[in-house]
Length: 191
Image (tube, rainbow, N blue to C red; front, top):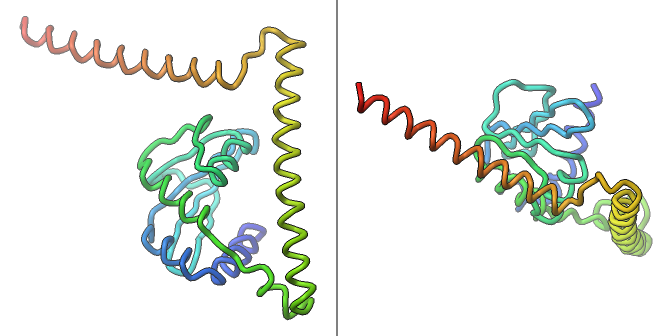
């Protein structure tokens, strides 16, 4: 039930932005699975011309995106995919994130019938400023907390070190796979 309510609310908001609905229509029927690491659940998202369909824990997907909630939010807001594990159609993942990132909801228009034109405009401006301040504060708090923990616990690695390590492991994995293919080819040639 909460998922249906969230889907309805999201689709009502998306209906206020026809350009976003057009971008989502281009992805019609494709299944995107989002798995926030700390939440412990998988959320399926199927874009269509009227918005999004949400479903719980689908098994198969066109693309599966895993990562920490902070990394998922950063990817959606800034397009920065560091820290995310993307399996499947990476172009689909990028197109989906771009479609949501480009969404422009006219909050004053939405709130005007409830609050009046002037109050809705001022409220939207205040919320926009407060949202930016919260984002900056949260980013600063995360950076400060990471620096403090790295100072107090020298065994902890920085995000840059972790990303570098993951890239090296990925390269090693690809090199081992190439070596396995070459060995298999050599064995076939000797037989």
